[in-house]
Amino acid sequence: MPSLSMETLHDHHPVPHRLDKIEAESVAQVPDSHAWPAHAVHDYPSLDAPSESESVPIIDLSSASGDVVAEIGKACESWGAFQVVGHDAPAELLDSLESEARRLFSLPAHRKLRAAKPPGSITGYGLPPISSFFSKVMWSEGFTISGSPVDDARKLWPQDYARFCEVIEKYNKEMQKLAERLMRLKLLSLGLAGGFRNTTAVLQLNSYPVCPEPDRAMGLAAHTDSGLLTILHQSGAARGLQLLHSDRWVAVPPVRGALVVIVGDLGHVLSNGRFKSVVHRAVVNRIHHRISAAYLCGPSPGVRVSPVGNPADRAYRAVTWREYLGLRAEFFDKAIESIKINTDTEEKNGNGTGCCCAKQQNIAVCM
Ligand SMILES: C=C1C[C@]23C[C@@]1(O)CC[C@H]2[C@@]12CCC[C@@](C)(C(=O)O1)[C@H]2[C@@H]3C(=O)O
Ligand SMILES: O=C(O)CCC(=O)C(=O)O
Ligand SMILES: [Fe+2]
Image (tube, rainbow, N blue to C red):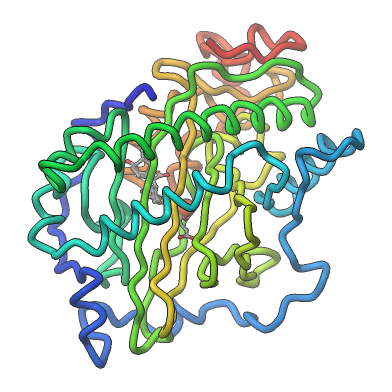
């Protein structure tokens, strides 16, 4: 998997105390550093059983009917997400990834800290990268992989890093195939043949330890993902993922074998705003140690994503993922606003915007 080089992009805010799995399991109360104000946890009302019309769509990729493209387009427009079944990723591989992630997060804190993310780097162990935008600490730990996992895995298991690397590499390959297939289907739903090749990706392993007071804590604060799309694998029993849909938080229950597909900010840009880059978050619970793995897929380095359709109607200027991550590091949830084209400027007419969709012909070939 090609890696994304970001050495200089991240802001360095002081990082508050992290709470690792073992420490989290031993506390009886949420410490003040991790206690989120009630309005942050309960800011939108309903988490009651969602009605039929409020469930994120489940789409079967193996379905013989020709409706898959239309279903995907509709889900991306109305939800900015869907669950996918009938994909080719083997169930055993999903299970192995989860068990490797559990093995990693179950290591004692001092071992995990050997692979702590150095300042300014993307990869390694630590708090969720968006932590620097919040004063309260999230009830989670993360491990970010970009490119080869070998260096970090060696720090965690000097003698026995091969198993972890093998699973990660297999998983990344499988996800790259699926992500590129999903991108082709999404483009088809926008009326374009073609797709993205040599996509880049970041694999984020998330661990949400059990929490004595889930109503006062936040696993992963509300955010959008920045890439073209994210493929999220959530562990079996525990609910946690919630999407903001029609001003309500809607839970996305884990479905055995299903993967959650989330439209990212660049997916929103590519569709010229038709696809929603959905705000989502992860909440925690008292019983289950929840694991998730987010495969965040973006275009290959240097490829600028530009809105499809008539250049005169573009709502966003073209950006590379790297450039956009720089804007996110600065503006977080306002980054998307910062690339909006508000007036009829030259930019809108496409001058110099290295578009990923060759000359806006009916082909979205992305090098
Ligand atoms: C390339 C990246 C995307 C990401 C920030 C990062 O530098 C590394 C991890 C990614 C992740 C995963 C969890 C949610 C998220 C918002 C975060 O804090 O870190 C995403 C970032 C993103 O999509 O911008
Ligand atoms: O754990 C989850 O369900 C959400 C994870 C997520 O949103 C992310 O890693 O970007
Ligand atoms: Fe996310």
